Length: 100
Image 1 (cartoon, rainbow, N blue to C red):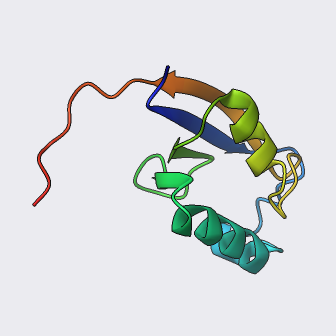
Image 2 (image 1 turned 90 degrees about the horizontal axis):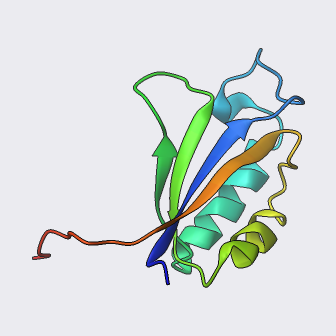
């Protein structure tokens, strides 16, 4: 069984490229949704891939299975046409730095 799931999300066909991430319509609702998932421990880590405005984000998710991941992200106020799931991969954690 996987320890976590790596979820890659991409801008979908309905994404309006004239807006940045935080200026995109519905950002506040999407951000509140993502903050809530993080607050409850479902999202462990997450953010854009790369150093500049990017089309992809990577999330480390603590879930029982892929179906649970899909079910939770289906509730995102940004629909799949705006922010789609590109991949969900199980991830087994073998190395971890000690925490202080």
